[in-house]
Length: 230
Image (cartoon, rainbow, N blue to C red; front, side, top):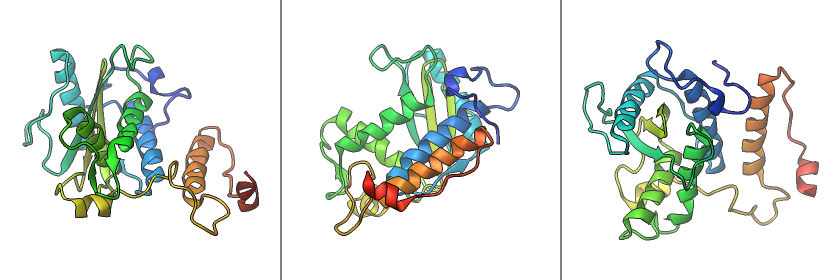
């Protein structure tokens, strides 16, 4: 595993060093994605280097254009595989944190679309509002339970995520959304009789232990008594 510098991928080199994609950025973006997927009770993704390479090529194309645009599904070097869902991000003055877009900027923005998703209906809250529907669609693609792998591209202010096998939001039906988009650990309170939020504690502990590995520290275990007392 390639360990990103502490402090996030704003410290990673922007240039791709001979492997076709930014391995540093993909490490940190995948970790951030899996943390958010865990909070929505979806399994972790693994890196697909082919998707990452293609996503990087598309990010560079978009950076040259100066704006984001949906990729074409196909087999060319700029094309998105048919089994991948696409999520796009462009850093602007409104959401700018650093000079280089970071994984947390993009992925936090995509996850924030959960406020526009109606879990009970299995559909966007405002399906006729393009901007709000896009926020909901980005969120559901990010956490889609059936997806298994991902690759990320980054260039300048542009971030491209291709989340694959199976692509999120397909088929676009309430039944599939309800099956693949679960509850949010942050929002959903523990069920009656539970003393603590097991989902939130499990995901947070996994994320903490991943960071502790960077410092060669021993793994922590869950103290249910302490969690219940908080």
